[in-house]
Amino acid sequence: MKRIEKIFVACFLFSVLTFPFRVFEAEIFGAEPKPEVVKPEVLTGFEPLSEAELQSGWLRLFDGVSLYGWLPVEGKYTVQGGLLVSEQKENCQIRFTSQFGNSIVTGERRPANAEGNWTSFALNLKTDKSDRSKTPDIKLDSGQFRNIKIKPQEMKSLFDGKTLNGWKVKPKDDARIEAKIENGAIRLIGGSGAIESAGRYGDFILQLEYKTDKPINSGVFFRCIPDELMNGYECQIFNNPPDDDYKKFIGTDTGGIFRRQVGRKVGAKDGEWNHLTIFARGTKISTWVNGIQTADWTDERKANPNPRRGCRTEAGTIQFQGHDPATDIMFRNIRIGEL
Picture 1 (tube, rainbow, N blue to C red):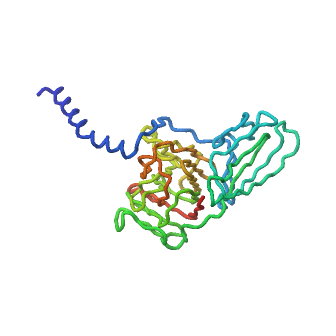
Picture 2 (picture 1 turned 180 degrees about the vertical axis):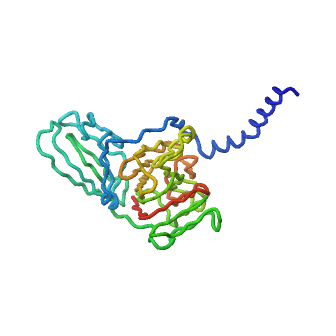
Picture 3 (picture 1 turned 120 degrees about the horizontal axis):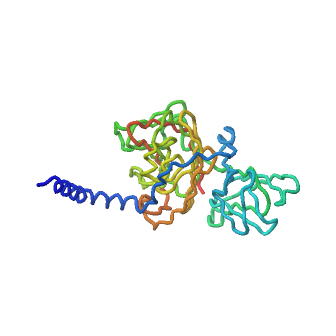
């Protein structure tokens, strides 16, 4: 057989043999957006929160450089000199796209024409537990606004800082992954595997701190099918992915919804503790890294009990990923508020 014929046959056989796997992969992950290809720039110009604010759970709703996370309802809004500004003096309204409930919103406002002093405002939002659809939106009217922040309320701890009570290692008794307590944190080493929460959560706000000492691939899975390994949505943790990852995957940066939405790069660093927040309510999923919003995504896929294949709003477990044998990551101050 001539060399060119051998090459043709080899290519044909490879295509035939790998076709079932490619079909299986498509069924598992569903239709995906095209990879971003270009590594996104690190977002700059925003005013970071203080460490004390981050420790208390505060998040910025307005980053000072964009309208990310906001949707005008009436009229037009722009960002000018770090301010959120309505173009008209009246009859304008803008809303935040994630409905928190059970939270405190604070900020400062002055008239749209910039005349007058800044005045502070505070909103105390509550979830209507008898009808959660009645939870109020966060809305602003005409004017100029700055320093808009939110602090979730009624958060409960998922980690006592001393034991793995409420968590289990998956796969059980697998030597590839180890979870232990060090200095009040969970240290997860190795993989592939995960630790899984005993509790199940559908609509929630999850806040935690994580630390990696070098570029490590990990993630927080949520609404997972209980007792199944990482069959859930994934909020990626990877502070410094290799450039090649951007050609292969959507959402490979910390805060991205892996395989679904690119996360904005806000400068999460290895070698220090970073703060991560995940918001999930119905089909809406949002994330914050160090208090700055990094994802704002609505799952418009058809309903499916497996989030890898479609939209899952049912409650599921939370899993922290040990991606591979090189994984070495710490988690602490893990708390959750149900919406």
